[in-house]
Image (cartoon, rainbow, N blue to C red; front, side, top):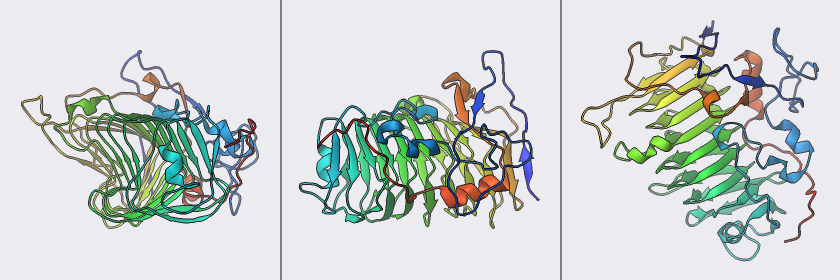
Length: 380
């Protein structure tokens, strides 16, 4: 039997008004329809639950821009630039993904070919880029993406697998990068992390991603000496952490909003709060394997403080299955807990039901979806 922790939305004071929850108006296409549980609203009343953003696949190509939920909601990617058509699976050269990502002007990057791109070194992505994998199946292997001192980047519908070498992450976001949206990607089996967000990088959303076959999944804040990371803000929603061992995520300093994620079979812990972090865990599903405690706390000393501190986790409406225990701290850890409504007015959240669990199992990560038409008809 599962148990749900904290059914009501509790606010510390009147400065934190109740958030407005919104629901998608278009159903996600599934192998089998998933009926709406009793008491769940849906504007179409069509007996389907859905993931956020599904309707964007049936509009126009650039409808993704500015439509993320959460802290990365302002990410525009290459909205104002022409299309760049990737026609080569080579690591570099004309028509390659690397050639597109190094260009300084805004670009909306699409693929005219499916297959694997073997990267010999990190692929650096410059500002105002959308890497849009819809319509093809692209896998990046060998190394990963590096988002260094850039802004307004969208990465959508790609696979990342088999990154090799020290400090090789699937997606590395550092330093000082902002307005980033990572959506509907599959990530597995890298030698370091799958996604690392460090060194004052902020205003980031990770959504609809599938993480598997890995140890250290998502790191937010690399070191307690980096006190500038207090500015970092990250939203992670509607993701599936499929038996990855730890870091879903591990957080130092940052404010992190987790909602409607499904984490199962962790090997050490599900979520870890360290020095001064604030983690708002809302309507997530935590399904234990052998390890039962979902939340872990680590004490570390900030470089500008005399004593060590841990972080804080607030669990609201989370569902704990198969004997999972939240492991919440009862004592005040000496820091204020943010509420997402202080930063964005709406987000899509549903009850943590078995239907949501099945939806996240089948419909996260890379999906076989058609590339929408580009209304602007920009040429390369």
